[in-house]
Image (cartoon, rainbow, N blue to C red; front, side, top):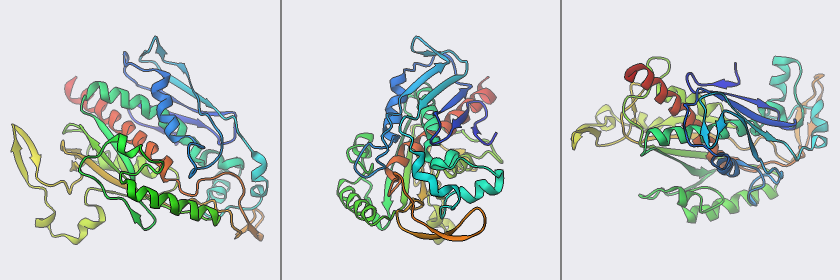
Length: 360
């Protein structure tokens, strides 16, 4: 069950990084939702390796195959199965890792839990597992767009190490996709690219923050007490590889304000309840209030670095290890579609739950 997410719109991902393939089963998708393989492929292409000079050079086309649940361009309401075959496996790059644990990877903890692990690429702990999430997220987005015409989710790279993007008043998907970093500031993008290339040439890596703005979400989504909307978003984001922090609205910065400074005052706007500020990040009491949902996710520097580091073996002997293989020096550009996918999955599940509970 640890590989499944959702209550009514439920997904289960499967597959290892260097196995025959990876994929997902989606259960609970409503029928008669327009869906093509191109809808899924567009998102997978944003996530795939080898797409630019600053990401891992592993060459995978990541071509989606819809195995079930779709007929003549429409969902059937039955389980949707999606397969993406692995075509560029190189297990030889992981020979040393059979004994030596890679620092800050899941090698040791998987051994501690299961007593066995898929050595090549980290198996299920690899970011390749997120292919299933991104494919399922593309379907969730189609459901939300059909049900909520104003729905839009825009994630972008806010910072890479010490470099920070300036967020413009007009934020669009076209602006974010106009550069290979997927940031909203073209000037900052050039500096970020230069930093990533420099760090990679040194055999090192860097991390940063992805910020996300979600528009068109109606008031009322969220299930108190334990399934609060921000709690489910936090769980979804923190389940992504390399994540180390989540904050919504004012986040940790809000602790520096007083209650009077922090409170979002209400007012009426053409018969609709609105807030003058949005320090709550679009969620109050665990329930969406109709304002933009705004949150940030911290991604650590990629754990794989091509420099020698101290470690231990699975027999308890101290040794050193220099990683090989093809890896991202910075995961953030490829993390953007992953963050968006997890938003779609959480929100479609809460939308269906709200509709079942209140509108049925």
